View (cartoon, rainbow, N blue to C red):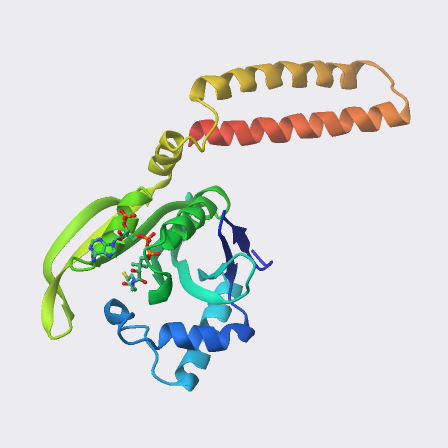
Amino acid sequence: MKKNIRLETERLIIRQYEEIDLPDYHKLMSDRKNMYFLDDIITSTLEESTESLKKAIEANKQNKARRFCIALKGTNNLIGAVGYEIREVTPLGKIADPMGWFIMPEYQNNGYITEAAKKVLEFAFLHDNCVRVVTGCYKDNIPTQKVMAKIGFRKEAEKPKSQYHDGIMKDRLEYAINKNEYGKAVESDNVLKYTAAELEEARFALTSTLRKCEKIDDGKKLGRSQQTLLDRRIKALRLALELIEREIVN
Ligand SMILES: CC(C)(COP(=O)(O)OP(=O)(O)OC[C@H]1O[C@@H](n2cnc3c(N)ncnc32)[C@H](O)[C@@H]1OP(=O)(O)O)[C@@H](O)C(=O)NCCC(=O)NCCS
């Protein structure tokens, strides 16, 4: 994926980082209190933030991660971050691990991260060929657990006193969502508009139309413009069938 990815929700623009984001990025990343649970990525100086931003831009370019910043619509100012690392590319698709998020304190509890993370999950499963997205948090991070539950993550493990943080060993929670579960989650959210029966019916109708077109192609000698039109129709029908078949398999 070469192009800069830009996603849009009702209230937010979710886009990949640019160098001009540095002042907001530094404000976000160096907020010691807000980044309490993220002490592995917190920065202290502008130089550290510059280096961290450079790495984020590079990781995006090299398809090692999809790291996005979040801006309110109508502004370009970064207020938060959401994204995932691409841990593994399997023959079946990518495993995103971990997915993470944070937002400036003054914007919290407005549903922004739920809105942004939902969109990024949609991007991961429907446009980035992910088969699994993994996330997690310390057990005392209640807002993150709420977000995970709201967007369809399922708890896979609770590891008691497994990670050192702030002077003590803490319980760690691991959550994940697989592509088949995502399909069901969006279905129940009324986002996926087609049932399995509707997809089968569409496949049947398209297969029959495609056969008819192919018969014409085999039989008659057509004029140039009619032949071009027929070629385009056959191509479009094959493409539509392939997409429907992929959806049925998943
Ligand atoms: C976690 C975080 C990203 C959530 O962002 P947000 O935009 O405020 O999230 P939302 O508004 O979409 O949802 C937050 C939910 O947590 C709930 N919540 C917030 N503080 C809470 C608390 N102390 N106790 C119980 N629930 C709480 C909110 O009520 C809301 O749930 P609801 O919609 O059911 O009411 C944000 O709190 C944050 O940036 N925290 C610091 C960084 C961090 O910990 N990142 C995650 C590291 S794993």
